[in-house]
Length: 75
Image: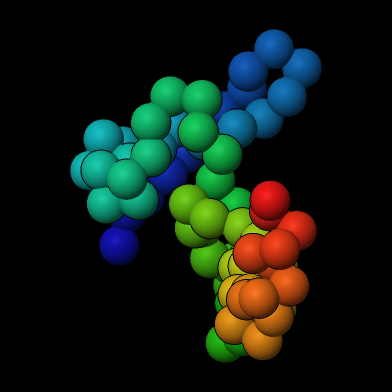
């Protein structure tokens, strides 16, 4: 478990993430991180948007079902 301290940044509050946490998340300066509620309670910090994964799954389904149509449209 990593302890974080809430600090004031201008008129806002925030936390600094230690280097080892950023390394594990494969995150760097300016990269977006997403905080979502975990099913077991609490929160989960992830380097990707779960909604984007859902959209990509739908797109992959369309690509798999209609390859000929998409190939014709790409011409």
